[in-house]
Length: 202
Length: 202
Image (cartoon, rainbow over all chains, first blue to last red; front, top):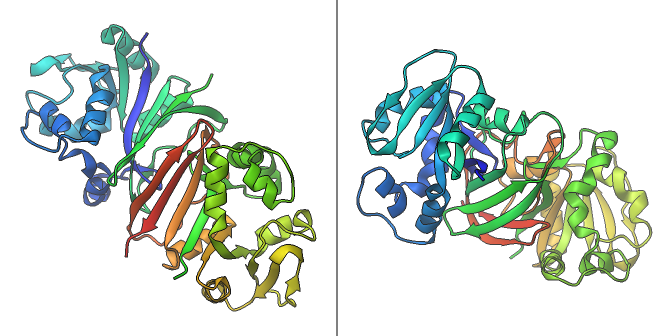
């Protein structure tokens, strides 16, 4: 059965995004920088080379199990031009938005479906499209928070960068105000990043 | 040379304390519960029994290197009665406070020294008292934040409990607004807690 996963890179103080582009751009490399030189990540972007190490294997394992993705409109608008004609998702992507728009099919297995009836509907459509593989809620921060608060998330797959950012959007807040018990299912790390995976206990 | 360490238990969302006692009491067991059954922790409290496992060894290693502690007045007032005549610190403790008070010597190596000229002075006195061993900034949250923001801290030694608390005081905020680069020096975990140790990079 598909599991719904919030998979994101965060700083040790939990920052996963900026208040806006100008806020995020100077710091995104500190939080996400660990992926840019991985062979597996580069291959997904259509690039050659990169480090073929434990982090690269872990990235490949984390993203290899994903059959569909859900993202917010802000993240989509931020990234769509950069992602180009052969986007790095290689899977159906469901975008939560208020604006109706025709489905867009790109190269390499990526499609963009615009969902106007809410996050829960987007997750449900993604689970169907994933055909038993897992569903990644890739961001932004607000969509991930809403999904956790709504009880839609089975797993947190966090990649913790060794830095305190001190400003921006914190992933694990605005979660609805109830305790959410977790179970640690993986702890792994290199000098550049620490990987923490948790299942949500229901 | 002594290292100055912020050593605290936090939830995965970074909560290490409550807004007040009524806020903290119902949740403290979720964040700190991993220590209460450890043989090493129990021995420090003068109690017998407990689990003699990897978490217990790690607690003993983390606290065995501590030669003096610094804490805030709120934490002191919260705990002093409970800690009793033979407190669990077994080392000099320096309390940052506005109220002058005579030094108090307890059994088992613990003393309480009340420092009225600020946190930096308390840390300096603790480093002298530690005689080459390390200095623990044990809390509360506000004192730990101030110490990090002031550049007084060499190491973060965090014990991450598998729970999202969703309210209370977050350890890693109000840190002065500058990026603080870290180096991961230890990653270890059991099902009950994940231990993350970082050096502050200067």
